[in-house]
Image 1 (cartoon, rainbow over the protein chains, first blue to last red):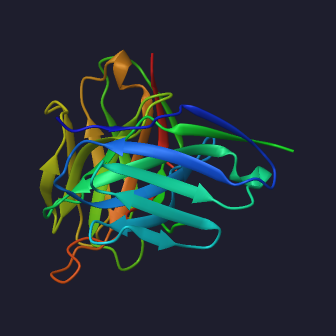
Image 2 (cartoon, rainbow over the protein chains, first blue to last red):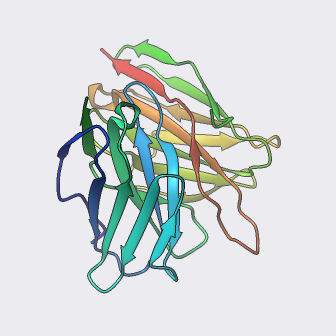
Length: 113
Length: 116
């Protein structure tokens, strides 16, 4: 069946440290993956995406790694800041015309000052 | 801000009533998807609209229906509301074209629906 799961429901880091949020997916037909950040009372905010023909993509302070062999996705945040505190979701999209995203349950990132 | 706007932001309804939620997509986007997010969970796909037609549906009953208008805005209608329908309803817009098929989806702030 379809599922996207996260290994750690809560991650606590010190300000300035690097954060790594992990995600496992089960659908080998998925061809597109997105990381979203959701702050309390707000909608999910797009962070970074990666297509299945890539294994790494970098943005500003963030890097997404995709390992299709073990169906694993990770989000790395460099020099974590208090403003990074939020729930992070990975989402996968199956190949096809419908832009249906399958979300996991999320990881709460708590940045300690 | 994403440019995706939803209204209203909060709504309280009684069990058995009907509700309509609205979404304006980001400029240049032609596809709208609706998601339900229960407290403490990830968003669940309800359905998607493209060219004013439903283009994919998740595991939701027929009392969840929608519309897309020529300007790409969309409505989500829920009939015969149940207590379990209480959730954050999110709208996401994206661009579907022949080349990229689908671009990244940008979400609105959501409508918090409470059914009592």
